[in-house]
Image (cartoon, rainbow, N blue to C red; front, side, top):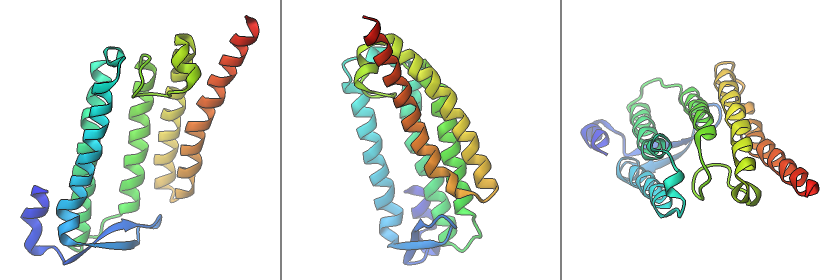
Length: 194
């Protein structure tokens, strides 16, 4: 908000706030919303994430490093994306599609790095009924998820540089489905052994 207020006199009355996969603006918002409303919406999302972690009955299982990621991820993304939006509004030639892909890829890598370090809890991680009831299932699923999300993050970044934005949706879907199937397979295998 402070950056937006400093740039306020130079910013146009309508600012591009949404872009298609090619980096072309497809939605505009009034300047007041882009400078004040958007950061406040992100702040609200941030507070919800932090409140969910604080209210978690198993919050003692959440390591300080993982909690640090939760504390900083939305503020950093907000600072970068709002600044990029303002600079684009000022007419600078910014490859917003590359920046978004890079941020998404780095986020995947960051979460992939921390997933294996997550202990059982109700607010951070791959929270499935069978991972929440079995610590071994939780640990194996998060170890696989960590490797997979890191690999997907690298793929997203590479795809962004090669102008292959189509890779994003399959990466997100496979990042959700593969650990779920793996975890369920572990659950069924253990259940059949009993």
